[in-house]
Amino acid sequence: MVIVKLFGGLGNQLFQYAIGRKLSLLHNTELRFDLTDFYKYKNLVTNMSVVGVDIKKFKVNFNEAVDEELKKFFFLKSKFLTFLIKKISSRFFSILNSVFYKNYFYEKNVSSFYHKLSSYKNVYLHGFWQNQKYFLDIRKILIKEINLKKKSNKHIQLLKRIKKSNSVAVHVRRGDFLLPGIKKITPLININYYKKSFSKLEKNIKNIRYFFFSDDISWVKKNISKKNSFYVSGFNQVEDLISISKCKHQIIANSTFSWWGAWLNDNPKKIVMAPNKWSSIQHNPCPIEWLRIS
Image (cartoon, rainbow, N blue to C red; front, side):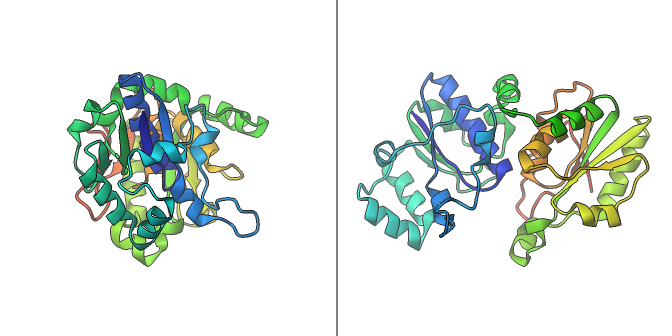
């Protein structure tokens, strides 16, 4: 059995899904997800997590791991003691598990590639796994599975508009990237990056129709204007991700969300513009064929 700890937003969840799916197919074994992190953020009124397990909205192979399955990989068998140590430090808990169990993998460095992962049929994975080498060979399967179970009429109309034009998805990430703690790790992309990307694309593609996606679309309308543009609003993030992937080309932010939008694009002639500097860590998950802009 392959168990993957699921946490973070949609982009991170997709990396975690992808590596789990690859290993489960490699060893012909079941795939389960540890969702305990999501239960930390419950709304006290509805008793539901305020952080969504958004990948469930796709056609993915999704099953939650139960306590008995999780215990096989935890050095503490007591649910109460496990809870206490996790409260003190989730990182310390994972390090201890990885010491006691050789098939418990805790990703200590996001820029490292863990070659041994594929050796284990029964494995627990805790990390971001932001490297396409883990799952590149099942890309066709992932493209098929990371698709919406249902599409609204409004979304269908948008996808038609995207399909019939020389569409370029432009993703502008703001939101939590404006918070001081996150800005230190993941710098906010400036407007010059987008201007340089527009210029390079327009030398190669005629009659571009730009489709702007953002968690702050009103800011984008005020600060980034292009002729023949469409500012996408009124859709949820899983719909936005699929819309980005259906554009012929992409200009992405330093965001795993738009990374997936570009990676899932199956246009063989696609051009993807990506930031050269992804974060303060010496790590950039973008494939070498994507054009990195400083």
